[in-house]
Image (cartoon, rainbow, N blue to C red; front, side, top):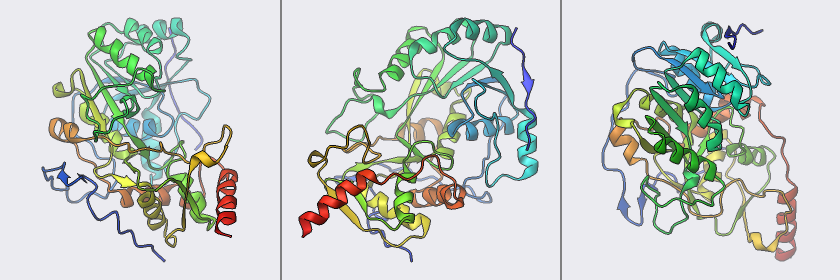
Length: 380
């Protein structure tokens, strides 16, 4: 039987003309008609929860980004939460805005099950021995990683899966909705196959499809890519026109959505897109990052990616296309709504992470130098 342990561990602002206009009004069509009043008396970004029956919950992953915020919400709601990880990273970490007492209380309650989810025999034996009511799978990428979990827990009440909006087939008709065609050849096909497995097994599942996620502790170079260049006072190279429309959702809003589906009959065997309320252009995002970090309005340099050979390096952190999804289903069915607008969310990310000198990846301006070097030659 796997041993369960309680962890005790040592302890000048730019104008941004694009953003105030509603990018939810795409081609003149208003997408969001229902208005919700913001709750009064709680600071923005506070991890508040609603009461529900106590569950024995397993989170596959949970020590990075999404899981860090989700696990706190679940513990605050009174659930018994276990993180299944390989144990290579600290099981808990104190958040920048978290009090010592809150952190101490959290880490005293979190449980850890050490193992490799690709060791299917171990997964089956350890999970069946412990038994869980609910599984949150935050880091699953392939269907064969999920099947042993389902085999081990035949009486599982709910399987909540972190999928991706990247499963949608590229289309000229946007935003993507949950009923849109999917791409079986996408790089997220493993997540698509997992959703199919859950459906075929008759599991009470809920699948969440985020677009781009941002916020404190983000391990993907989303806002961090812009912050590095803004801090260095460098121009920001953006492919093509810079008018490509995309969408970002704050990690805390995503964690809240994960809570909303827990034990919710309306979420049974359903898929939900989760992201921010509005859409933004690449150029608008650069300006929003500058405003969030208190930097001057950035110099933006547009370039044609076909003019360069970047090798295996990625010159820009987003898909060079329009890519955004409707969150109307989650709003109407779950009663969920993003708390952060884009600049507020980027400010939260900057103040609690990059602005404190912490980031996941060192700055690499090598592709920028290729772009800017050619731009200077063309200007001359």
